[in-house]
Structure formats: C-alpha cells, structure tokens
Length: 50
Image 1 (tube, rainbow, N blue to C red):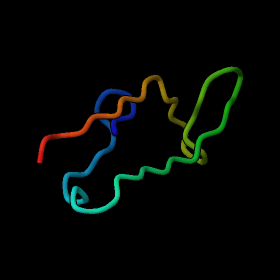
Image 2: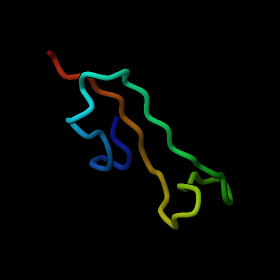
Image 3: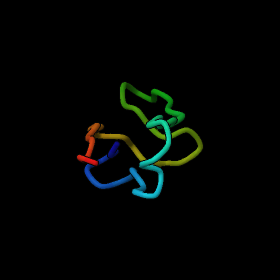
C-alpha cells in the first residue's frame, strides 16, 4: 500500500497478512496522518506477484 505515491509498503512483510493501519483525521475536508502534519493526497493498494 502506498500513501501519497511513494510512502509506505515495506517489502520485508510480504510473508505476513497484508494489513496496513494508518490513523487519519479529517481537518477542513482533507485527510491527515494523526499526530503528523502531513496530508494524505492519494492511497493505492498494489500486490506484487510472489
């Protein structure tokens, strides 16, 4: 899973259940990481072939 085009998705967890948790909060109609002043502009879920 990638946030903002290139943030996230470590390769070393490919053998475990593919679950990503990101705490987000909506501020003024936009999503931000909770406790981090960075807006989430896009989310993409991709799966590589084994």
